[in-house]
Length: 306
Image (cartoon, rainbow, N blue to C red; front, side, top):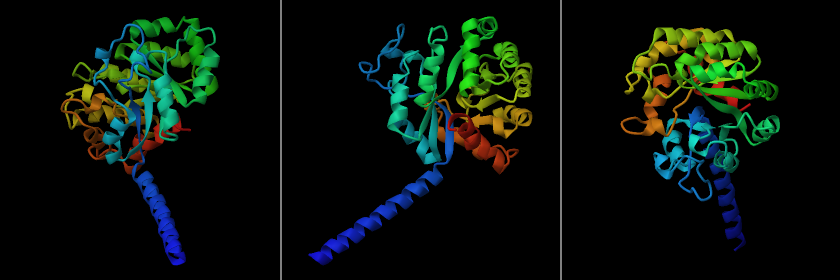
């Protein structure tokens, strides 16, 4: 019996070492960071939708972390930046719970009401729970209104104070006004989502791309090369977006660009996760190995995980 107990102890110890080595290898393999993903749950009792939204607005009906992992982990993605979903609006509870339940895996971009009286305290509270930026929706008219908005000036100022990013889902026509805001708040980190939606019409407008490249004048501006399914030809292998990626790389350098999918939308219809990763990892021969590492990991790690 003594020998049996010793044997079992040895087997258990060996198993622990084996599991540790396997986990280490898995972490090494899953080195990429997806810088833009939405998650939600069909449990609207525990996590109610904001006013004006209904369950039918949730398409697909569910996109939980486990559903996300089934897509991203086979392709080397081990960390994810969660973007607060619009139908939860200012209630970031589900995103925060997901971050807490998966230590080290997720960081977050929240949504906050810039007009609330305790804005600075709210921002600091969210930052303490893993939020590293705040999502702002803007077009030309809205961005121009921000220039004279006391509440938005506070938002951008507090972002600079706390090292948090203003993450803009911006239309191309908003870029000149965004430039003025960057001039006003040069210390505020700004992340432009989805190439500023250039190409959503099906055509890459050179004037819009020039405006996006000009924002590289500001050292704290970053761009997500993301949402390939929605831009240009909107068709895999997405190589029609190559020239846009090249021009942004030349303007910003790889250390201010980050790749992202915009899941779950990247995995709907004829689109899939693998093709999104592959555009940056395999299909753009002008990107060096170092460039790819920054786009697929380093930039997002610096902005959202440090």
